[in-house]
Each structure stands twice: as C-alpha cells, then as structure tokens.
Image 1 (tube, rainbow, N blue to C red):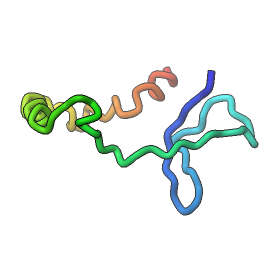
Image 2: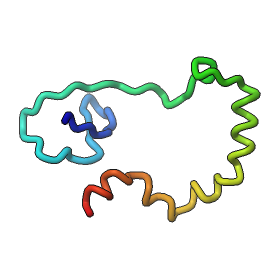
Image 3: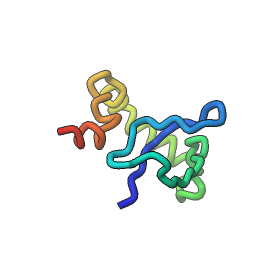
Length: 83
C-alpha cells in the first residue's frame, strides 16, 4: 500500500500535516500540487443554476456542518487510526 498524507508547500518546502506510519528517512516521494479547490461545474455536468439550487437546498445543514462539534470529522481517518 502506498500511504498518502496532505501537506502545504511553503517557502520551498513541503510541510506534512502528519507523519505517515512506518516511513523511514530518505523515502522516495511523488508530490502532486492540487488546484485551488474550485470546482469546474461544467466539467461535472452541473449548470450554474443547478449549483445554486443545490446550495440553497443544502443550506439548512450548513450550521451543523460548520459547528465546532463537527471538527472531529476533519481528520476522521487519522483519528480512527489512533483507536
């Protein structure tokens, strides 16, 4: 299995969000830079109007998703691995 971790490119270096388990010094890596996080609606087959309607329908859940209690799910896989 090839482990994956997230990180941030800053000042010419990659800062990992967490250390991957069982990885030693001088391990080979491949770095893929992700986009801005924007979603190309047209490429997903979603019109601007459909996206607006979906956002409006999901708005009732926004308060729950953004509550402090939900932050436990931000790194769910990492937290689950610690159990």
